[in-house]
Length: 606
Image 1 (tube, rainbow, N blue to C red):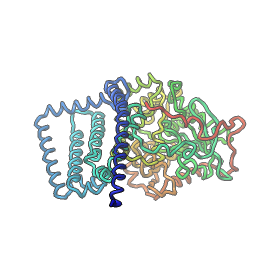
Image 2: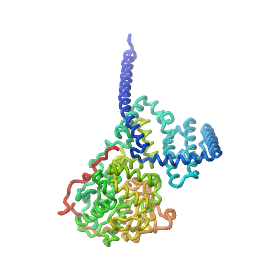
Image 3: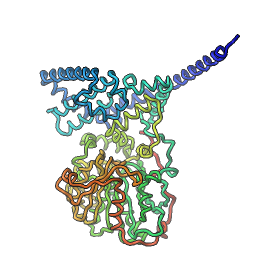
Image 4: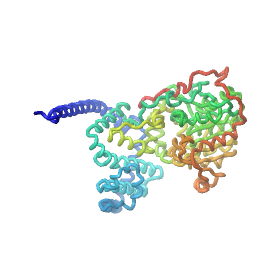
């Protein structure tokens, strides 16, 4: 007599055989695709190392800095031997502590706050605790060694520290499948599936970058410009070589008399200010009763190679101000600038002031640097040799591809924007979650050759904003101190791209009234912080003090978003309420619906 188990066992075995066969076929296909990509990837790396292909990583500078460190070590053999002995002794002590169930005194607190080691096994199981503590202890020791180097100048030491940090982050035990308890746990529960999915994610990212690894940070299929991003209703009312000017439909019966013009950065696309309706800065501003215009920058190609920083000023804010005034009939506008768009706005204000005509009632500058002598880790990528390399590459192509800027920004926060996704996508075999800001972050824009070199040489290297007369645009020396227009400066305390201490000095330079506000979080999350979310906080101060540190100590902290505080300030410069305006005019009819055409052009990987 045949039992139920006897009948079902062959079927179960057959299903298992089919599954194993399917996995084998899938692995074979993935291996084939991987073998096609590996030669391309190797060629890219060899070309980057040899200088035949541009890369944001400064291989010659790295070799020079670490070469000097090696010579310094060899010149002091006794010191080098003691350092090695101390490192071994320290590692053994860390192992002893970890096996005894206590964290190493030098890094125990830091380990509990490190998101890479949040899985409970890193703290509870001796093996993983030991791996974590040895890693953190050695990382701290290696960083100290570079800090104590005597043969490097300040810039070389910054570069050595930055790339030492990149190496340390790459070597984290969390990045290796056999050392990460979360990966082991996941594999035990899910079998071979996550490994194959991780390999497929890796191959797809190689294919997407034509051999260069382009790590996916979000589910790109979840978003589309015009469908669920950049959906605030409006029309393009003006277009030139560099901009489309969007006027947004009013959502209130009455609006402020003085229209508002926003100048976003062109290093990325404008819709970071118009993400989904619930976190759209532009929609919120329209809902406050403002007639809002916005510049949408072109994604430049070879035809824009000779467009310089002065062209961006003339064809950007200066042209847009003129059109906004003609469309609305207003004598003056309120203007806002974000990041490099804020720098351009400051330059335009100084230029108009020198010309004796400033049709601007107020200026709002978001994450806008002034003193570029202290720009944090971004300085690692800027020196004469690297600018010469950029100039050569951009001169050949007519532009710098946006992927290089994206890679740079990822390296500034490598654990969050690189290794976090290596673990999630490749080791755990998961798809990244849908995140609108990271979709925008991956939507890169190219940078025209001349504009980029103008900016790097005249504004960054020469610190052209902070040094009176160092920057000349259209024959006019740019003097920021001459600006009398009331200004509102908003910076964020954890900004790694526009450090707030590089923005603060302008408050003591301007001739007109200035409000400085310091919001929580970073470069994007601190700006895109709608009131309904009730996240972060912001600080205000009564007057600029001697140093940023003094201002911070005296500042008053407020809960929630900075948007309402800014809106109250802006309304004081926006005039009376008038009936809501229609879009465009006889001379400037609507050309197409928002978000326009410029924002839709994607940059090919390169």
